[in-house]
Image (cartoon, rainbow, N blue to C red):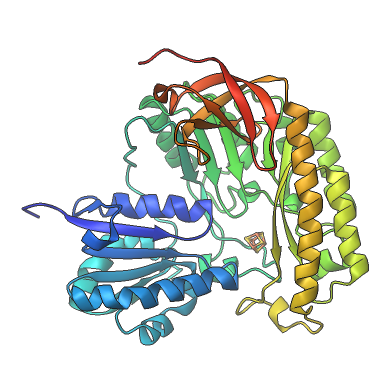
Length: 443
Ligand code: SF4
């Protein structure tokens, strides 16, 4: 292509995997499109969607409604929707939104340049899940980038009864270890320091690979790469959290002392109805083993309240499990029925006002626990990786501890993307305050 490149704007909804997918989209389109942060100047407007909750899906539809006037003003603008809602709705979405040019599913990302060219000529849909997880080309890393998300697998085979992921992201497919290692090595060679491995269920990484490599082995190989300072991963399924993996916490120095381990509920009958494959006792035993392996481990989780049939006694079991597990952080949601899932058809759907009441009570407890966890850190000196300006004040910096808590402190801008030592001075509900103890000089 000759002349100036066109511009693409990407709006991302949902989880870290979607953020990583959006980065990949930008990269795959980079020969023809430069990324813009201004939707008004875009020639291509992509929306990367999330279908995990009804609320996020509603936001996408409302955004698409708003884009109608933009398309009217500039008919040559190509509007595309990708990700989980696109996968779920396919042709229906194209029929519902007349100004939409392109619908591409979760694995259509790899075919994006071809799909965009086609969408410039005719309205296009690609929701094929069967083409598999094509190895992405070599990634281009932004200069000075210290943190990277690296997708190691796609899809999920677990079919939790509330979850739409197996339907919209397909069955599990793992990337070959050599591709992952090459991508991480490349990132480190360009000055990167922290890597978060992503997958719906990273613990079952490796199934179906030509070279049988299990997740702990992948971690060990990555940990041996020179330059890696921090290694994280998400998300772990409790049933697949092996003793070998637990043992790596505290044993692999680069593995951060943080684990996101979604429990979802605290009552056995609810866990069984959710098809989670573990009991509350199993979960609590794994927490105990984790704490024995790594006493400083911070644990975060996901929780759903108001799953069909959940009684007050079941909910009390959830509160009790939350206290016993001692979570440092949690993401809590009201159950919302999703298309195709088994739970959507279950009797005894819990009334909305009861879900709201339970969520409020759960969040009160979680808030107290999170604040208490922050208070326990006050007085210590700790390493932070500085991520950028603080959300609270543009004059301050924000960084993250190895245990994943956010710390705001005053410091020079040259620290962004670098490690510093911070004295933790005060605890807030969602973050800590600190004072810079030491940091590297300007580069
Ligand atoms: S493990 Fe369960 S909740 Fe997680 S993505 Fe798979 S089906 Fe969904």
